[in-house]
Length: 600
Image 1 (cartoon, one colour):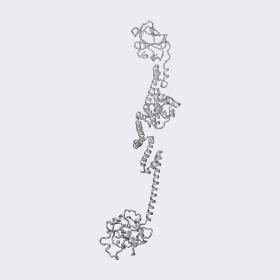
Image 2: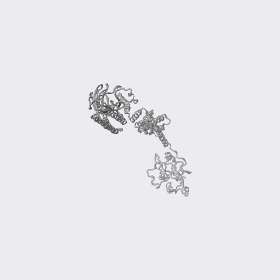
Image 3: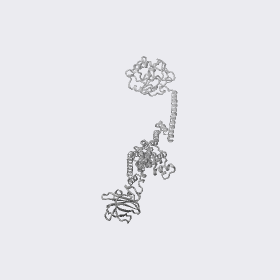
Image 4: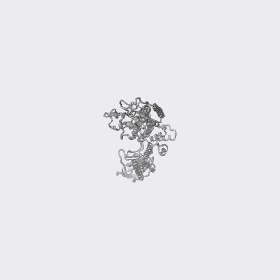
């Protein structure tokens, strides 16, 4: 078999051992040896007569595996003009053979024909048309295929190989330098990210580690940076009372650091956040005792939520209507005296004022507002409730003092606070009641029932001028012998006790007063009566309330007895003397008259 490129005889194979050109086995039906030498066709014609699709599969595979060699055509005339419409593996041979002329074969082709091996072939995914060999000098004329094989192998030129090796070496050196520089830049960025992380600049460390991607352990430290960035948000979330958000981040920290002390720290804070969350839930449900206990159980967040303990106490005081306790707790929060030490040890005038409010209460509501300054809506609401509560209590105190109109004004001002509307109606009812009592007392007085009027006014002594009215009820003591009444021929002399005044009345059988007389203490008086049978009653006392109430409830009211009888019989032409009892003295007995002055 003859190589179509170098013209040397080869024993077989897919490539020429001398020049490396892909070769095609001759067709079995037309061996080249039987054709006359003079009539042999040039290689280009033989190639043209063998269609590409009829080439054996082994040759096609050899062509596919052959390196693709980029070559420059031997002449300026385009060799593609003679190429088939669909180029085959042997297109480079055809391109070269188109320049072959019938001249004497080159005696030493090794010096003129460059070997295709000298060019660095690049593997291609699919076979492509191969252009003419690329050489620095014009390609020499190729020998005809029919020429005898050249005995010696072509000598390889070392110059292109040296150049190629030099270029490859330079590229390797430059590539190595590039790789070194690139690695150096990565290390620099890694160190910068590490410094940022150690300095707490987690945003920068996250950005740099993310850019480094899989370099060293950058992915891990990027995740660390993100966790730390999230961890920094916890305080803000707690401040906003977003405990669910804080707990979510803290759980992420716990899970990420696992056995690291930071995991224990985050777990402790997560537990505290849950406790605070539960405490606020209790507080919102008005379970102030439970909320207070939870706030007091805190450790890490104890100082942050210490105020909540006082607020829970204030809410409990509101429930128990201990208004001054609310004010004391609010003032303690304001002055950071959460233990309320100012109550026992006041240091300034404001301390003393609030201490007095706590101990005694006050009606100086404006001063409370000037001293206690609520910090938020919750505290404002508590202070407002406390002041209303103080007013509410004051209204009750006014009602106890029978100052119903003032109490009604306060209850009206309080509106829907507690049961103020109901208490307004109570106060109004009391007002009406006392007005009626006052008017009734006045009616008794006008009717001459001075003692009864005095009692009535004394019952409402704080109402209006009742006390003064009651003082005006006792009347001047009658003169001795005054109020005399009676007629007849029989004289009855009455001696009064020495220490007490007396009023004596004489009743006939019909229980009608037929005679009476006032006898001053130690004095005597005489009345006239007709003959007949009488009953006698005597009133004793030292304070006079008129003829109706006599000596009032302080007087003694007796019915005289004649031995065992209550009747006295006076005979015509007789005179009688009656000595009223005083101590063991007296000439008659007596019994108490039921009904007092009304029984006289």
